[in-house]
Length: 136
Image 1 (cartoon, rainbow, N blue to C red):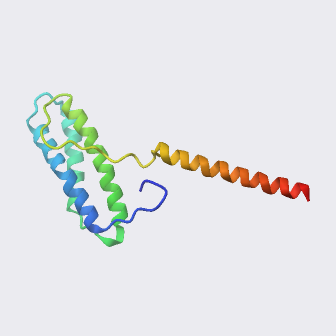
Image 2 (cartoon, rainbow, N blue to C red):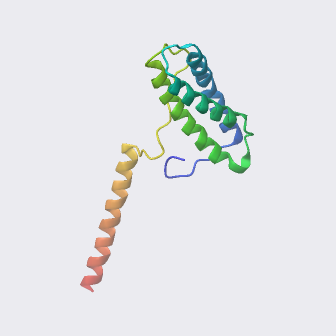
Image 3 (spheres, rainbow, N blue to C red):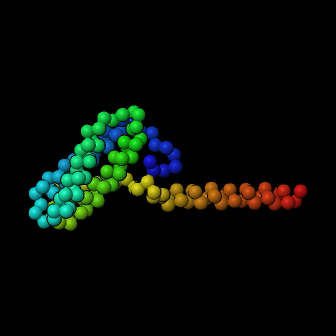
């Protein structure tokens, strides 16, 4: 999950994510199968990835681990975007392009500014208490 607050997702959110990414995976599958310019190791790596994706898609969307499933889906989404870049370097790639969500480790500059402001305010308040105690 990205961000400071926890993300609330439902099984239908997971299904929506799978349905959004799957057409891109299918387009990549078709391209990898027909593109003669891709080498054997790339094809093999794609096959492994596609099998893992299909297993994820076929998994039941469950309330018990919905957030983990959603996080996994976002990770797949980022990886599919990487595969699109790899395959499109050698072949024409039909189908929808993916704009992946930001990596969970990336904090927006707006959030960084907020965090910095809160930290500075905390330091100022702590300094006021220290000075106030020293004066007493």
